[in-house]
Length: 445
Ligand SMILES: *Cc1c(COP(=O)(O)O)cnc(C)c1O
Image 1 (cartoon, helix red, strand yellow):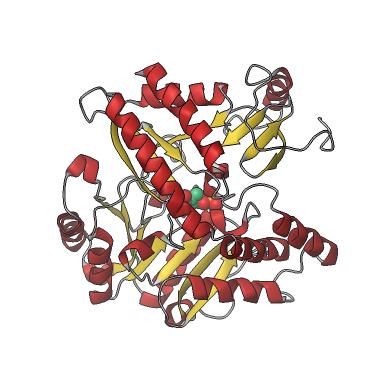
Image 2: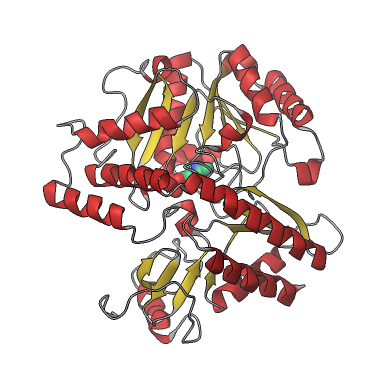
């Protein structure tokens, strides 16, 4: 291991070996003996330390992070406030199990979630460890509260990898293949995907609602579950009016509207939550990823009468709302407020969209540039068509990685490059990353 004392991380990308470097390559060989092949790595550099938007690998390369560990480290790496809060909590106590003997930070996180999530109605929360666990529990609550069973989900949706959330997720490979049977009473309807379907939000919502009413029946539906901006499915931003129309339909039909804000939430899109862009007020919001800056924590926050309809003891888990993760979330929220990071996400959107739209005019393989805040993507196509071009996306990621930039692919067809920089990334760092990305796009054009 490289000593963490060796040198400060600094703010610049610096590649000093071929990537992955020799020590990372040796580590990758070592892992093959003991780590399941089912768990893969996008970019096999092994990380020693990190700060802000820079990761340092065990070969001493300084890598620019445009992925934030999949939208988790929005406040950046090695945030002093987070280090202090977590260190103090580790020294005080690391675990009691909230269901056995409680502690204040759990309540404080729930107070913050009630204040930050949309709507001024009374809300209560339950805390968990992962996004998938939050989604499972949101569905449990909605079924319990309504006495109904059906759950409506969308094309391209991603909600996790547990049994119920695999059923809720759209894409077979790699998430579901051979892992069935899957949970029942899950019904999939078309998403609004303006680049592909050309429909207005109202038209796309009418199409989805018609399918629900014909194939399921409104009175059987417990919950409609949707990512307000789809993450793994391809950073699909639904047409304006789609989410409000679905929200109205759920209210009219006694259906619980669950916004899965696990990737799009916590300031990522330039509002605390992506539904805020259209004034939609969900009945339940699920949070995780950006919530606790890298500590495992997830939340289910909803209307008090829905969340409290569950019998005593019906929700919980050994580690849910762990005290170390809870104080990390409180530190994240403080840092977000003090450093105005929700506004920063809006500034980043301007830079990202301007830059990527201009790149898209120069090349013929970018079909669409879309996103909000610091959640922006390009969709790669065969020249002059809307046919997915996964090979281009793969080549772009490879080029970026080889030049010391982390960029992530996503999308049902694997043809979308998504940018999820830490919200603390500097203008200089972002410009550097976008230059490498532009070179990468040109190299595969
Ligand atoms: C990542 C993600 C999940 C699953 O979260 P995990 O913490 O990986 O279980 C669920 N929903 C969305 C929208 C996600 O992006």
